[in-house]
Image 1 (cartoon, rainbow, N blue to C red):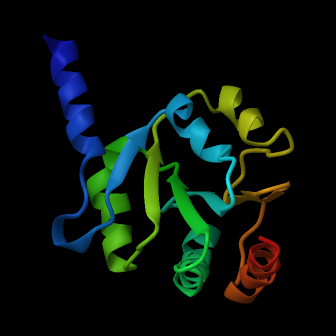
Image 2 (image 1 turned 90 degrees about the vertical axis):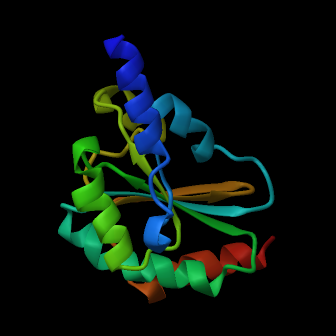
Length: 163
């Protein structure tokens, strides 16, 4: 019975969002997230690993959102992978999304086995945040740093032109 209640509460939490204009936040483990890191089509993907408790992550979020807005009609997708604690979903993550008018897709990664999955994202990633993966047809690049809009735009724009 406890397991059923736990499962139902996790499922409900995974569907939170869209109240008061919030971006829906799904809660996934790494196995569920991993396919998002390997799409094989004609789209450029920006996957950003971040957390609300990370100052550089919060600072770069407007730049990521601005790039998303600039290329919203192009074959460009953003996925924000939050590493916040699930028990901080309402007070931390959803509050941050609402306050900052985040429009990009947000996933809360709930998988405490980071030593097993960090290398699967990128073998050179130390686990520091923010961490950004940008990939598409015939390229895959990773960045262990924060960005300004101009820096992100200078990476994304030529990739979209080559599609």
